[in-house]
Image 1 (cartoon, rainbow, N blue to C red):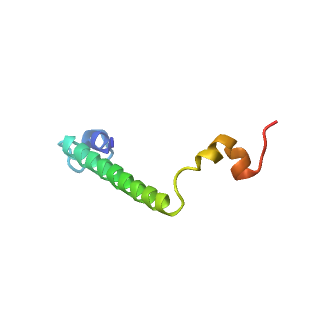
Image 2: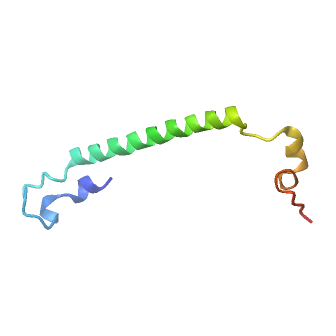
Image 3: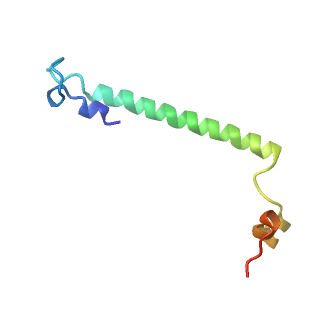
Length: 80
């Protein structure tokens, strides 16, 4: 996200655009929009996968399995 801050022409090694407008608040907003879009995309994708998983196998074990303990039920292990 700090590309907009660090792309400031007088601080970079390039001679192009020495007015300092290559790095600006506008570039920071463009970067922030990209981050926000990625968060929304990831969130929606995760929700879709959760709904599919819930429909196919469920997200929780039964109440009886939970009481007995998941080590024994799922893995066949017993804690001593």
